[in-house]
Length: 128
Image 1 (cartoon, rainbow, N blue to C red):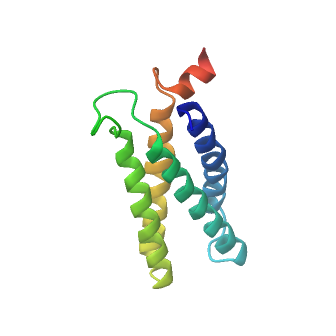
Image 2 (image 1 turned 30 degrees about the vertical axis):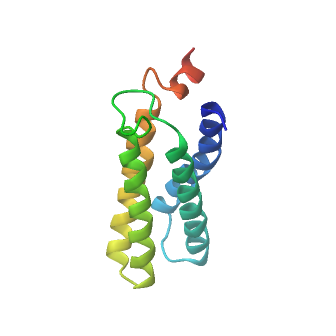
């Protein structure tokens, strides 16, 4: 797949994840709907992160000619999903909540902000 195709696939999965994640953060926790949407959210995030790992860094230094600083947030997101999943299985609500908030802030807000910086494809698509 081309970089543009990977970016589009990433967007198709991360935009609904962002909307679902926002809804999950502001609505009542623990309901059957919350659990169902939480599973969908985690699946979308994991798929989107895997796609992002195939996208090579185009700005700044890179490791192995592929991974850039923004990929650190991809790995943070995978780790947060794992922690949140294990925490909820163990009924550790506080740890689950903290992992999900960290995922939302780090993976959605911070990484999302970087994606719209000048020189990035999303910036070019939106502002050029």
